[in-house]
Length: 69
Image (tube, rainbow, N blue to C red):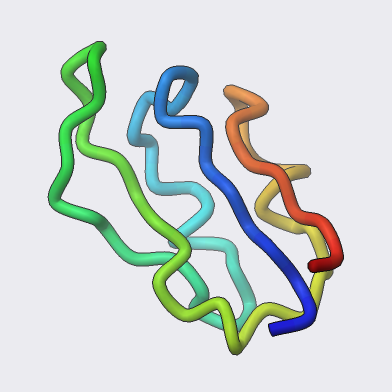
């Protein structure tokens, strides 16, 4: 996996924009609820990530970080 993708669940409000706009389908709903009561996504298919950072650009909560691993 050339890229590491992390979601800061403390900031995430579960809008699903990362799931909707990821061109490679890296994200899915996790089934977990964060401390603010929102269902949060997770980067389930990291092997598909190409490091485009569209998820970081569209995330309204600045909850996603993409970096080279």
